[in-house]
Image (cartoon, rainbow, N blue to C red; front, top):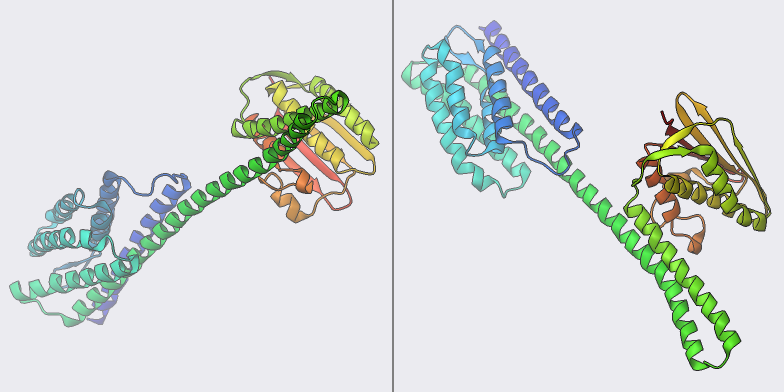
Length: 421
């Protein structure tokens, strides 16, 4: 008899292991699809997996000398009913009976009775448990499993004069404990999933709030200046020379506000609208000509070297914007002069563009925050939108960006794009 008990316990634990493995694989597969907009499985999927688990439980059932089968098929039935609802429960009850039908025997009657009772109990309990805390639901449904285990052996004792107390205790303990463990695990996974959804939503709201605060700050400053100058012009309209100078400054401030708005628009629509062959040599040369006056003003030596004649696919205007933004950042990091190098080469069917400066550099913490909204190395003079736009535009052209930097030793930005064929 001791051997029978060991066999029963081993068989039930093996049954539990199979159920856990399949449930974990299903949840991990669902999470790996990044379906952050959808939390629940479809009823048909729940039914199919619950039926599969019940079938496997039957295949791993333990049959002792008394002729009854011991398995954990009630656990997938319970989980399917909890997460599938009324549309799944009746079909699971039918499936539970159907997979037991070929074996016949006295246990078939018990299966029919228990399937009907369990279905009625679940239909009654499920809506009442829906608003409860998940831990409360775990305890209540574990109690249901305990009741199922007791009745499934108590009823045979009345009908077939069956009375193995030790078997009853082992089966009740394993079924109740397994139900608690499996359901607790499922609820933990669901809770983590909900927290993930909330974290993503919170992160999006943070980005929006940072962008809104940054834009209002950057646009308000030039508009305030324009307002003040217009008031000065209005106070003394006869002073033509002074008013002309004030008008020029006001126009430049409006241009600055327009540039900030354009940066936000570029970030909102980062992907290139035009795809064509872009000659790397030509775009680097144009960008160099545009940035040259600023480099001369800062006393920076600008050097360019292109070691190939290849092209990439994308929008030349977007690529030029990326290059100018990165080069401008490099120049602004060298207040006391230095050298800005731009060179390009081809390697493994990829075009690499490297922009290196000898400026102040960045720490590891600053590198990690590079491209975040509202983060800039320029203090109050920057918004962080330039590099944020660079990251988006490079990604839109199916490229990658890597930034290397050390404090006091300058910064190197490595852009790579697929070579045009």
